[in-house]
Image (tube, rainbow, N blue to C red):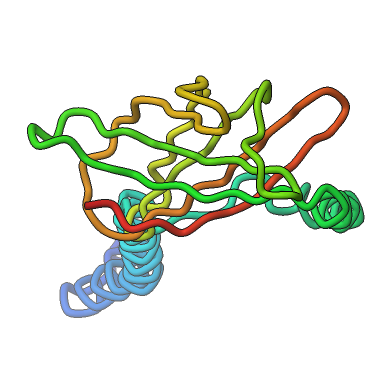
Length: 180
């Protein structure tokens, strides 16, 4: 007598199938966690960068590398300034309505006489907001005195970088003034 053979089945018993499925789903857990951590880190770095760059009190000197490369030129300009012996003073006054201020620069030659006929320009920045720079061309008000209206609303200490050219002579100087 022959025993009938039952067909061979290839089904996996239910408990084993569940464990294989759970292993596959757990296999994606670590790569997903790593990707989420990397994306969160990148997003927080971008957020910090945006906050840091939007701060008006933070400033970087424009073309700093170029200024470093031209250091010898700056030293030559300083020697020229000493040889010229010109003197500079100035002030910044804010208007009562706080819309426009007045930048005044007084130039004297080496003997203390008013320096007339110069082309004078200036770059002004408040120390607390040095990223906000203003460049102005000053016009003669009287002999040796030059002025320009300037959008200056903040009282306090300002840095004024003056450049004066008369003929072949070029003079530069930085001032610190208190705006009232």
